[in-house]
Image (cartoon, rainbow, N blue to C red):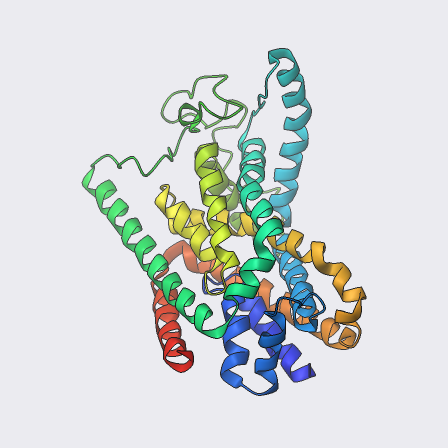
Amino acid sequence: MTYLQAVVIALIQGVTELFPISSLGHSVLVPAWFGGSWESLVTQSSEANSESSFYLAYIVALHCATALALLWFFRADWVRIIRGFLRSLPASVRLSMRARRPRLSVQDKDERLAWMIIFATIPVGLTGILLEHAFRTLFAKPLAAAIFLFINGLILLGAEVLRRSTARRKQAGVPAVATSSVQPHAPAYAADPGYPGAPSHAAGPPHAPAFPHEPADRGAPASHRGPSGGRAAADIAAAERSDERISGLSYKDATVIGAAQILALLAGISRSGVTMAGGLWRGLDNEDAARFAFLLATPVILAAGLLKVPSLAGPAGAHIHGQVAIGFIVCGIAAYASVRFLVRWFQTRTLTPFAIYCLAFGLLSILRFG
């Protein structure tokens, strides 16, 4: 792998991992379009005996860079969420011991969001461990990636149609259909009878805070909040308001949305794209669906990278240490810039441009490799 190839692949990975256009699909299609030594990168990584593939080892390093960029940008949010988990865990253990069955003690949005992320990560984590190699060897080929990228575009278009339909119903004052379980001012405990942590208190009056220990003006910008992760205090406050809306999802809905990431094991299907589509399906708007997608992606991307980091110390990474160092930096910067851009984008804009891109590039690639 040359340094030019390393930089180009790092830029592609840093951007496409977070944009809803499939990083895995682009890591297959772009080298295949270039041909020659570029195409051999994909060929050797999709072989059944490819555990020593330097291209896969390189992609692993880039995954770690992307995850660190996400952690840094959302560091204030992750501090809140992890603190919420550490508060909830011992209380949940005590409650479960008293009840003699699994129960969750959840007192605020941060505690609830922490458990939602855990439940949502389990399906894709188990599937990735068991089937990632099989998915890669069967489907990480140019034609398959092109077909799935085209399908990804259709998924994004479908999600956008659903969002607009829901928005029209709300504007018309018609109650949303059963596909939406989000309530803006109350957690969806009533929709969670099959999960631990079902109702332990009433939702409260219509304009009360979602959780009894949350002040009513919790989401308002506060003067003591400083910038974090390149974000202004008002942006961090907006993130807290978004988390309160997201925490209105049921645990079951969060798990279904997280399970959608399994599709991203197919080269051409975007992790953030299908997760956003799942969020829109369950009643979130574009801004909240994108935020939830980024939060869910962080542990998955980081775990995928860390589990295979040892391969960099073996034969696969023996001759690419310099390329890994350069690519790690380039990918981290690109991912950080991408998440900053997308957080702003989805405050006012939609998935449609990304859907059109996937359909166009997917169709061209089908014609090229079909």
